[in-house]
Image 1: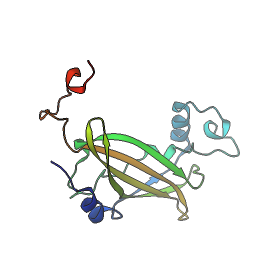
Image 2: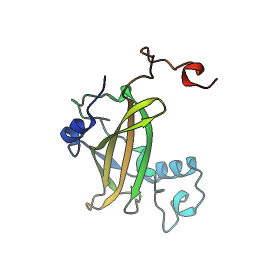
Image 3: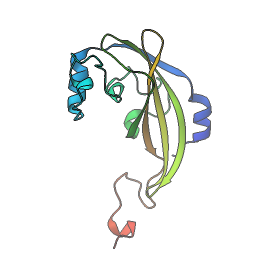
Length: 164
């Protein structure tokens, strides 16, 4: 079934549908930094005078919902197409974050497998002083239609792709 991306965008973009609070503590900050391969003292040593979270730290937080409750596309109907992080301020232990979620954008692209619908879920993180810390955009991709000749959702054989 083809989905009208422009109509979906007009109806859903910019509507906040979730708000969640998080408390930032040193131990998970260090664990996250180490798991990312970070070696700088300011990211892995709570005793460092400039101790802070790595720039991508807010990607570890999730709201209560991935999509609005009545959104016509569910998370399980697509796949994760990655995240991007825009850092605005330093995050430190003791900060209390509020993350607000909205559908930021909806657009179409055409790839080798046909038309794809991209839904951008945005979380804006602010600290206890109301300062914007970061913006995390997560993209969900839903295929608009199966490859020609396929209706069962399976992958096409190599001869159908023209690989032979």
